[in-house]
Length: 295
Image (cartoon, rainbow, N blue to C red):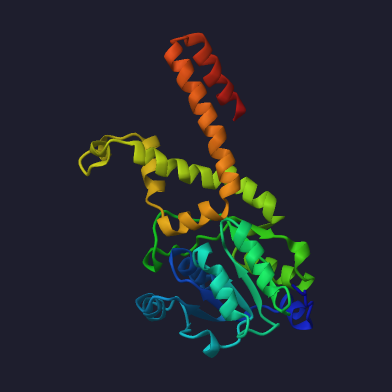
């Protein structure tokens, strides 16, 4: 991909606010992003695109966005476009955007894993003059849909800016300015280190929550029992209610790292099972204490 360090992009970094930001995907994350942009007066206008007509109408009627975009060909020229859709849809969206946006527009996303999708996007944009740099704000909720937006979701939160050296200086500074304008704290990282870190922390934690709840007897999670459950199991149940489409895309997109993490967990699970079956209190205590000392 060619990196165009256009004066227009560099000029944006000293402007007080953006003129028009387009958010593609108005679910809980995208809706919350729009609310944060409005709250912090980051852009003069916010445009929104979503495949669901009802979501678009809700966003417009509740003043979450200013303009509805129904067709990429008809959209006003935005300064910044951010993809807030499931990762699996990125490739098709980028293909459609290539012929519609100007080299003055910065393109980004908020995907939780980069991997395959990151490589595909760069391949599509390789012979264009479009400016793209990926990001990942460390925010989220198990709730889905625009009606569950959170006004200050991105405030005081870390956000990763991915592979800044593969983008132009103007693109990097503009994206960094955007996130800081929302009260987020940007951190630079390359996509491989990012995906490894996420697999070992966020991704494996969510996958284990799904697996844990799947392993529970149905009687444990009936409507009559939650008031009797402890905080640990409630947290697993909460995480297991996260959007399955979003997490399917994340797990597949970061499958190599997640599979390795699962192998380590399987090994430790087998070891813990042997210690418990051995009825060796001293060894089991030593094992649990060693884990506690890690934190």
